Image (cartoon, rainbow, N blue to C red; front, side, top):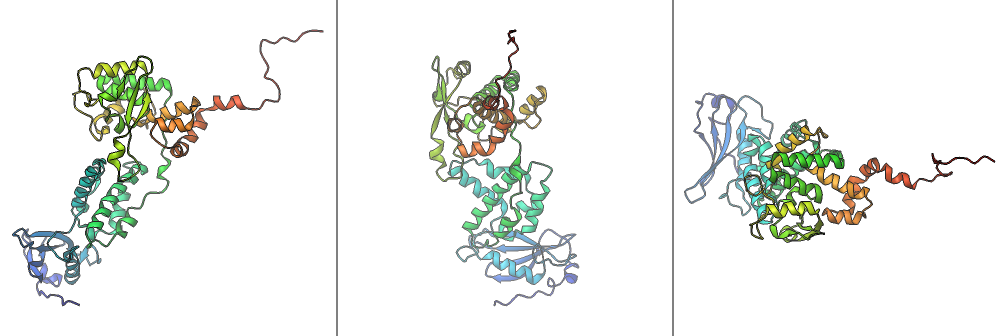
Length: 415
């Protein structure tokens, strides 16, 4: 075992607290050539830092724990002088045994994950979104030093601010970024931190899919047109096709086939499912019938644009982008309030309503799944109970009657 370095000034809290509070750190223990553990004196607990020279004149410094100046060591986030040395040495051992690269932080893990998503033609929003909700302390922390308790505390702190299903989607994004970091850096050996601390919340998938009546959908679309013609056109397209917003905004002018009687859209596939061949899937299209009225509106809006130009645009003429919801969420809330619809209704309610509308019309479930770019398994899982609630008029025709139903216009003959 390597001998631990000594430092009479920093080994215990009493002499450390006599040091002047300042931003510039005090030299601590030399851990090798160009490698040093340092100490920064703060008003509260001090900070242990690791400074390493990369051999090219660009040293990196990373804070990795608090010193036990006022609080006793917990062996994780608050460390003694000698405990800090052990952690610092672990951070120096990179994948190739060198210390030339700085430890991967949650921040850099998210950056790398965003790059990977872009390269795979996946949505980079999944790497950007967590930054809005992660605390500054977690963002800047080395992945190798994350603990299950702090990640669980952060996850649980989100309760009440968003739906459990949304929390599960968010922590899945964070876990994916951390897992990718661990695959590329052998110093990260604490997978249990996010596997335990970011475990999914139970029963979170019981969120209610809002089903709107046909009249309410018509009101929804009309109100959207009243706000902005382009926003209305997007809403109209989603209401009639039942497509996901992320699919509809990828439509090109050439995807509109404006047949005078049987117009349709060649809708891009969503590439959902986590496969690595997302780019290939996104190039695939499937046929979705639309009304003559919608086809006419789309044709008029696309007049003069190139075949490869986006079919649906925002009011200012710009594309909707990879995260269209960010551009219309306020408008959707305005619509829901105006028409007094279910407060939980979102743009996805148009998709849910489209699926239920077809099922109630006795469209075969396999065809419903195909037209909505999903599977029969997902249709049965998420919509069966809604069909039971909303299709009493269909099932009632199949009830067994022991006697023929009485007719009001039947008059008994007198013998």
